[in-house]
Image (cartoon, one colour):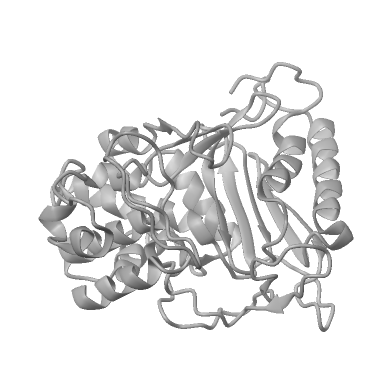
Length: 367
């Protein structure tokens, strides 16, 4: 298993707050927010912005609000619907980070353990880095100095650990390898046993090399890095995304991601000490990553233009763009998925979350 994961690392190296200021919003405020969100969904897929989109809001009401726009299948015109499975991309990191922190709580490893302790010689051989200087904590908050994997480019030289934030899929694939070394099990099995099964996440799994997506699912579409209105759209539903693995290889549904994010925000998955570690975030400023963010151990915070700060994560991978974020108290959350990858990631985030988390009746919302 260890050799297989080391091979996976080689492949990966070549591939690229608070919702409202008032204690409770009126039904009219909520309805206006939902109407604005529906317009935002329509806008997200208008003029070729993407095939189809879904969004689900949970804000304390008995019945969640669910909206869609566009199509699940560009050939048949089938509409998107609730219950669909989709690739969640980098939000996988929240699951991997949770498993690592549970192992820390159990005394099976420490955040201060070095990569060299668990994976001797791996970063030296494949990255030219020094595993003795890199800790597990630095893998999880992307301060390891290790470079990201970018398709078609030579891997840059690593930097000194602990100096600055560098978003890197390599960090989490290494973390996944450490989980497997520490448990003697697979990462997929640990996610299933520790998270999916206890939370009854029936549609959430790490598929490995299996290219199929459980039904029901939307088709996944990509321009494969091409730009411009005339770029060809490819159906990549069956693409092998196993290279993303611990960093971005999972599949889930909107309702499952709500349940997971709620459990995470409410501290039901981690003891207090590890919960504090997960939400201790470093600045991403100057890294060229997502503006207005701070990164914890698998999750991050992001500030909306109105000043509201949300927690959770996003995921961008071939054929799929996803978000799962909410206020820090976990009382107001939104999960969304677009079955395409050529939409402006940051613009889409702002367009979707502003109507729900920045009500016009609240000019100075607290984060």
